[in-house]
Length: 421
Image (cartoon, rainbow, N blue to C red; front, side, top):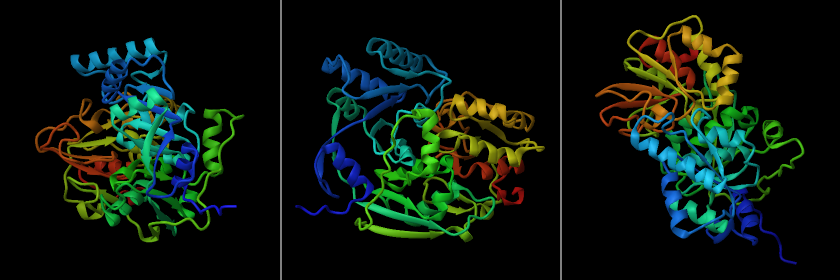
């Protein structure tokens, strides 16, 4: 009997979906469990499906209108109508304006389970690694092929293991951890690699924090990432996917081979900021106190969840946004928005003179709801700070945790939030 080679999580999931034994570096055609597009990428998906004459899909599919929601222009409105018409014709799922960001509403829908293979026409599809899925972004044409055939080709990535230990200081959050890691390993440190997280800090981290960390792995160059599938994962999934669903307890084998292993002790970590115009251009927030800001944005698929809003509300409660700053808040989904209302967080934000906009991407991708002016400086909870990312190539974008963004909005300059915790 052939001895089974120990496997990483990525090797296990792709092997199961290929129906054969795979190791890092192998190529294979794998069955896809779920696929989706958003309003920035679905138009091409629709065109390719119609060109191929496809009448039904071989894998589960949905579309999300989130990048420009509600529509800010005639051109975008045409795309949205195209998506709505296509969803009716093919009787496929559509999350329309106000539902929220794809990387929040799709997990909330219960469609993603541990061990799944997921393709999204969006680069931050790696977010679903928080649920133990192999999820990765692809181009619109690749995604259309997956819909037509139910499969796609993959090169099995080598895996990096990251162990996070120590005691997390007050005022330091999951966003600070991943910014610190990206700053150390650099933006190309995980190119076409899978990343497995473990360690006591990860075990203690809530699901919102795990989504944040996995979301930003593509800024490390990674193909996919994985959090442990544990009691927290199952507790988050059960009310969404259904209590009677079985959840794969997927984990790496004890002797799995990793390309590299990195340990990070968070005990001395401080609030971090990614400076323009690269995510790995990091510095401690306290070192940037002379940087004045004009806009503070709280939201996105990275940090628009309920724990993120709670952290910002702790800073903003009883305080006002600086008169020289416009603060924009976008909950990541309708579910999150309703929970924020129930908890009184929205009341805190409005009294602080922040502006609440519809759940969606908006300012993060520079389409509407907060486009920067010439030379304007923004601090954002988003995942990218490239030139033009917030709609104006002459703007300057700093990335930080919700707490750091809120503290900076109050002070009018980049600020260390630890004094509020």
